[in-house]
Image (cartoon, rainbow, N blue to C red; front, side, top):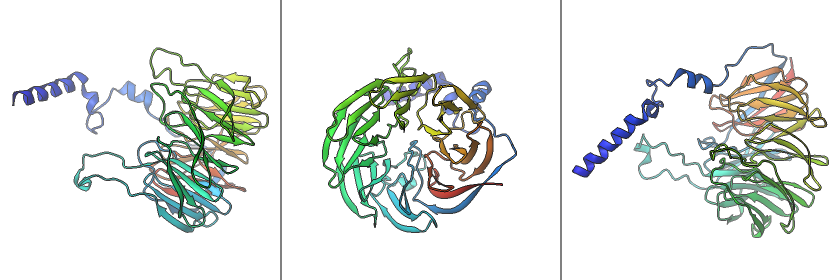
Length: 413
């Protein structure tokens, strides 16, 4: 029993040395008030609403996204919208009415032996990590197991299923008979869209510490653009995988590995002859698509997708400030800081508005002209994390963390 006593004593000493912070998840243990104030999300301020956020319909997609910070944006194909939860449920809906067309489950979640009786097991059994992509008649899903599953758009039947060797964290992109995706170990791959067979792959070195996520590839003509965890943006020939050019968005700087994180996790934005890209702990840059040469740069880092509207690029930084940058002059047009640390989604621009969701489930509507708030509505108490999707007209589709797929419309009051 002596070794056991020593182990217990050592554990107790460790907990005493670490202080009460180890127990701060308990509701009756207080944290330092100054530290809490610095990290607390900004309280929402009332304003005169100029638009109304009207819910058109709401449908259910499985059990939600889980707790692994998975972002699974829905995707529109013609008159249908497809969405997936974190546990393998994929569903197709009529995007005008919200009526379910089909629903399938890819795999059963692994709950473990007698897990229903284990109240202390907080393990998240989610296993869907990359999705949803669509094209060539397929709905494409990436799994933590390293598998890519292609389902038929028509009925959800499995067209093919392959293992690419590592967890797929990006949304697959489909173009000209090929599926492009990125894995957690820094590989960009091209698969045959009909069979899932590997056509080519490119390996990129992954730093010691990275964000959990990868940028989704962007395809334009015969070029594939991809960002990597080491701060590189590269262009490749889509047929062969041959590199065309590369540009280092940001060099790792700082003493700690945390400071040196320069992941390009947000999807690059293509606009005319330029491509816009931003890195975590880095810069926002406009590059020439033909050769990757920089046109301008600003010190705005982000790990979320960029969006364009009103001749401006919109960016959400690491502490959830929203910026509008003029695409020609690179000047900051406006900044909105009232959503500090509310864990915003990637922005979406349409019509005159800029939309962002937050971790408390609010959809915020900002004016693209000056960044003022013009509308707000709470859609789900479990929060918003995934990027919203905009269809033609004024319809916006939102998949909440709790698994609620909703269609909303923005209209002037």
